Image 1: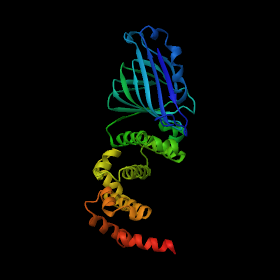
Image 2 (image 1 turned 180 degrees about the vertical axis):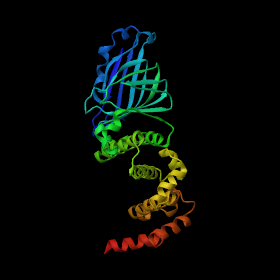
Image 3 (image 1 turned 45 degrees about the horizontal axis):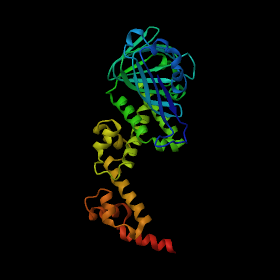
Image 4 (image 1 turned 180 degrees about the horizontal axis):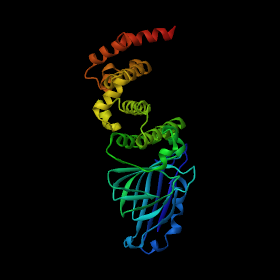
Length: 340
């Protein structure tokens, strides 16, 4: 038998792991599955505390049982990839603190039932439900997917009325809204060090996730503006993290945030911006800051190449269009004013 659970509070790190990384696993032999109930105690705490009555169907365990979750826990918001062999149980216990949970199935299937509601979630589908209601669930052997769990108190302000959460919500995982949600969660995973170090970044991540989930559940007037704001922020984060990447382009950005190129251009245009103009501006601004910081230590040819300009003359022309003078004249004037 192998039972493990790992989770670290924000602000602490160990080895290469970040403070917000989360991992939980359970591995049983066929014989051990006969008395498995007490072994699920680790899953009844922390982000999976809404689960209860977990049980392994006796006919589904000839080769043992495995359950694994690995992802990130951001101040109560969980985003984790989960693998589970056949399992049944209950999700939710009528408590206000029970979270809103989204399950995106990539293989196998999961079924959720509450009263007259029944949702069978197959590969390529997402099911979002409020676990303040009690849902019975079951999943097929070797089911994999992504689980997102977030405090319901963060979702309710975006949907107008808690009644919207009275039913489960199904959607195709390939819709733009769900693709954007999964790309956003991937961004959290890829930048976990930043989230581990910044309480502000963690708050932004939770709020953005709540907004994206509410947009899938209940689109409402004014929410399009909030959605566009979140997308633009995510797109600009992609730019900031790839200024020295020669592949950076509107198509690269659109693919990274999970929207079409047309949608990306439309959202930038609605904010009176251009995706490529923003890329060029941030590159020349970063070059400007390095010139002031390093002065004669750095050559224009080196910095222009690093900022992905085709040649130095192109960089000089762009710098002059933004700052009014050439880089050399700008640095000279900066030094003169600094020495006064």
